[in-house]
Length: 379
Image (tube, rainbow, N blue to C red):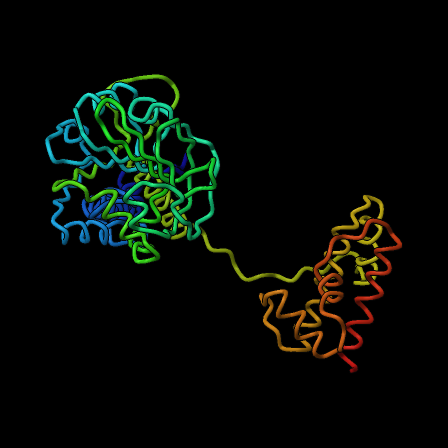
């Protein structure tokens, strides 16, 4: 007589319905959060975002000075120009060459490009080239005669830099690499700005950032704030082409992966208590240390050996002085120097210096570390 060992359909459903229900709830919650987040803000430089990298403060400032700010992520809104209107194009998303050409043909009199790519520069700001250099965020003088920059004065700028063609106004740079450039062509003013941080909620109040934003962006009574998305109206060159998988789809994929992980941890079999097992051979700690030292010497791994010695010495120093394990090296050196009277520079080299270049230097390092730990234990 044979006995069935497999589950029936009913038993399988009863075993899987709870995990499937939990997975569905997690995925649904992730989708709801994603939709709510997307509805609240269209990106890190969105005029509706109150996050540190958002631009809600700038939009409010412009509104208080009579500028109507209209945020959008629809390309059709960016190609509907009008008199007395300015177009600001954020750094997110991707557009193909045809899309940029549509924006150029719309007839905007003033366009502001925030951290633009090669295609945007070729179509809207010919002659301006991305240098591929990054300037650190720092307070800089304008060093140009652009009225908006002259009125703002010192501004906290940094980020992507560009080279300016003849006749352009280049500001806030080192003479070659500039973060703000204004060019005029075909009756259109185009401002190229290499960073968003100067105009974010976090840094708008620093230096003359707010003044630069008002005089550069708030020149007309209406401002269209366009944040390009990953969709494109056509297919151009391979360079800067839209990704095959939009970011929102990737978020849903991560949510699914997280749900699977939660179910796996929940339904996984738990291991029993640890069972002690008698080892066939007892290896003493000293023998293990000697064996590891021989391996280090055979492979000439003086750097790893020195790192092990220094880590052991630092552990003893931390324990002797009550210093946290993650304390800054300068704090450790200062504490040990005060205790031993040694030169802080020599202590830093001993505890955090370069690895030794020879076996003799490694032995000397070991000896010096041993002497130091003995001094700390027995002052």
